[in-house]
Every structure is written in structure tokens, then in C-alpha cells.
Image 1 (tube, rainbow, N blue to C red):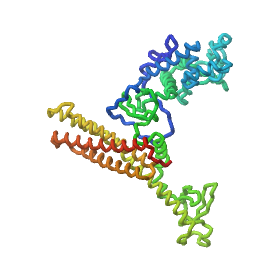
Image 2 (cartoon, helix red, strand yellow):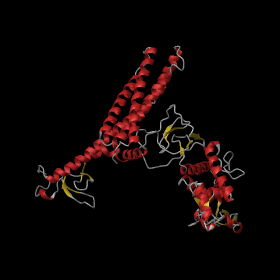
Image 3 (cartoon, helix red, strand yellow):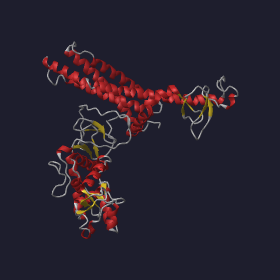
Image 4 (cartoon, rainbow, N blue to C red):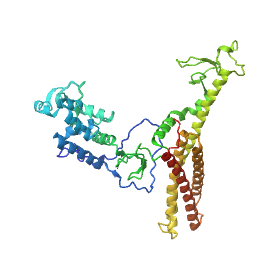
Length: 499
């Protein structure tokens, strides 16, 4: 192994070098459209029940659990790590199965490990031998596992590197066909030559621990690599050392007032629907029977649904059944009938649903775009603050401008997620109050944004400070009112959502 990359110390504990802390890992739930995490220096106190861990601190927690297990079951550290990985790092579950299992060999076989109790009889199986490699068919020095399968060093390196880099495997099975025995981390790191692969492998091992622990969550910011630890798992905002604020429950940036479940539905819908919705609206109609979307690719008005379970024949013009059209094969002169009216009603409902979705989607994306553009305000405000300090104002006295941009960003983000919240919200008296609060916050936010983006150089400093403070305090008040109402709805269970 190269200098600074060792991962096994003399006691068999796992470690990570300082050079290997840049990668991040998170659970990929398939959501494509995902608002980016924007670093905003917001003052937020995580509290005593939340701490931010560096990768090496996570490794310390892994080793503590591993050492506890090793001390109890009297097994080698490498075996304990494989067992913990198999039992998703649940020490209690592992120990329970260990002591309850009537057959020790079956216990280890279930975890794809050669039983340590067989080691005296298998002492030769892990040694190097000179023979023909069954992968490349070259005669060379072969090395293997306790399962008895040996391969040359280059084939081991290529096999493990592929599994780690291309498949993201933290623990890899023996290359032999139908052999489930897992290669332990000590052996894996000894067989891999590339420092890049070793770095990736170490992070995959750490990630296996983080992903299995409900009290740990990777910071979603790019190139951060830190982990947030809490004492109880719930949907709550937490702030990393890199100043990224995110939801601990789902790992997305903090998204109040919409909850994690609805946000996931919303983001999936955005990913599935938005890119083609405008084209669909302009160029297609729906089958009046099964509502499958159909594109007209010729001049004939006689349409046949391509849905194998439907196959309805209908008129493109009136959406009524084709059969009653008689001899009017290619021109519809029928004004109306019940079936055609029902078909058009169904289509109108579908179009209305699409228009409703686009209403919320466009506003959601507009605030997201404004949030990105307004992040440039920090540079403008910084210059203005420096000029104000040159005009004999103290550093403390000019912080109101930075505070105003912070408030603006918070409100943009809140407004963005109110549209996801509103999309699923059923109409009632409470929803009317919510929309009123949303409107007031939106108006106040736009006024603050407009004021901050105009040329502030010609403003009297004292007057400017008073105006800015008045505006951002009012915006904060409107945001607080909206979020308080949303929280009351959750507490008293008066929100009703559609799916």
C-alpha cells in the first residue's frame, strides 16, 4: 500500500487517511429533478443532540462497534467486520443470532464467511501457490481465500477494481463461479494496486455503515464528505460545518412546509412530466375510452387506440365512436352526442389537471431560478458593506445587508416548497388561509428582492439601513406566519392531501 493510505493498524481496526475525505454518498431514490443544495451561511444551532462528524470520526464509531463484538465473540476483527456488514451493523442482532444458532458453521455460511472454527483444517488454503490461473489461463503465482479458490494477482486486481469502481460493491464475493465467500477488507486492500480504487473502496465501507445507521446522514453538499449524527431520527433541519442546511430524514435540502413523502412524489412528478407536458398539450389527445395519450401522425380522422387492451376506434375531431359516422369516413360533421360529450369532458379534465400541474411547477421553478440568481447578491452586498465601513460605519453596523440577503434566500426557498405543498393540498377553508399567507409572503419577498437589486449607492446610509431592516423584518414576519399555520395544520391534523 502507498504511504498515507493504510487502512489497517496493528490491532486490526479500520482507518481512513486525510486524503480520502472528499467523496460523498447518499441513497439514490431515482429522483432526477432535484433542486440543488445552495450553501447559505444561516445561523442555525443544531443543538446538543446533533453533531457533525469527519470521516475519520465515523471510522472510530465503526471500530468501537467492531471491537465490542470482537471482545464478546472472540473472533478476528476482519471476521467481525464481515459479520457486522451482513447484519447491517446491528450489533444486537448479530450477537443474538450468534448465540442462538445451533450450528456455528451454518451461522457463518449465512454471512458468506468461512467458519473460523474450521481454520485449523484450512491453513493451507490461503497460501500462495504456483499454478495455472483459471481466469487468464497463465501459469503464475496464485493467491486465494480460505474457500480454496486461487487466482493470479493481476486477475484479482482487475476483478476487485471492476466490482468496486463500476458496481460500487463494498464487499465482493470470490471470483469462482457460485462461490459466495466474501473477500475481507484486509485482503481486498492488499490485492488492489490503484490508490484511486483503494480510496473508493474505503469510502464504500464507510458508506455501508452510514447507510445502515438511522442516526447518521451524509451531508448532501458536493465534495463535503462529512456526516451528521443525531440522537433521534426525524424530519428536522440540520446544518453541516460547510453551512449546508438539509433535512435529516430524507437528505434533501430543508424543504418546509412540504413533508418528505410529498416532496418525493413532487420531484418524481417533475422528473416524469415537465419536459414533455407542453408538447403533449399541443399535439395529442386522449383515447375517450382508456385515456391513453395518442398522437395524430396523418390526415385521417379515423383513429384506433394502440392500447392492446382497448383498441377503440374513434373520431379525432369529435372523440366519439367511429362506427356511427356512417359514410362520413374522413370528415366529421357531427355536432354532438352523449358519448362524444363524455369523451370531451374526460379530455378536458385531463387537460385541466395538466394546466393545474404546470401552474404549480412553473412557480416552483421560477423561485428556484430566482434563488440561484439572487445568490449573486452576496457579492454585491459584500462590496456595499466594504464601502459603508469606509464611510465610518462599523462591521456590526453593516451586517443588516447580509442579513437581508439571508432572509431573501430563506423566503425564496420556503416559497419554492409552498408550491409543492399546495399542489397536493385539498381545497377547504384552511387551504384558503394558506394561499393568502403564501400570496402575502410572495409579494413581500418580491419587494425585498427588487429593493436589494436596485442601485443602493445613491441611498443615504442611515435611510438605507432603516428601509432594509423594515423590509426584511416584515418578510420574516410573513414567513413565520405561513410556517406557523402549516405547523398548526400538522399538529391538529387539519391538512388533507391528494395523491
